[in-house]
Image 1 (cartoon, rainbow, N blue to C red):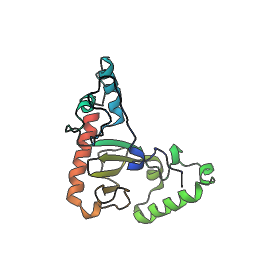
Image 2 (cartoon, rainbow, N blue to C red):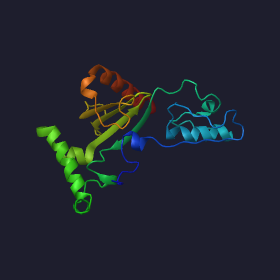
Image 3 (cartoon, rainbow, N blue to C red):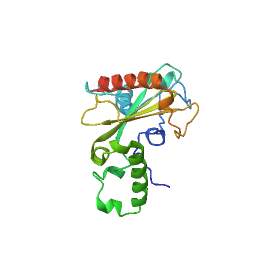
Length: 197
């Protein structure tokens, strides 16, 4: 449809191309499967330019990957984005004007599916104003946990799990079929977010 940008918690938005070239690289044109995050860019540039890194940085320099692309690296990459289905590009909450644009039918369709899925637990205010998506990508899986952002430690409102070995398009949520894996990945997600704070 051409309406999605880098505004979701899924692979199509969270994955971005990253090309690095430095004058002193030992290996040129190599690819890596290592998980790096955009927060890793600044400390990497600091290391490459010999500029001291501020102590408050969340990211980690990946300079060592430039010479050793197969080096063991991070176990996961994290992203966070509010519920885009009901707040297209941060129209918070959705204005009547936004509902009257060509997005209107799309918004109504998505909203209807979510309301049907949640039944009596459907809460428009929660979904429009307070629902936050916390996403974690490992070498194999993407986990998306939807929580009330007012209480990030609360039980998830919904959980999605996608297996990239079987479904790179992230179209088949397998969370209900793998409850133990979901619990393990949620613990990893929560410890990753706590480490970043």
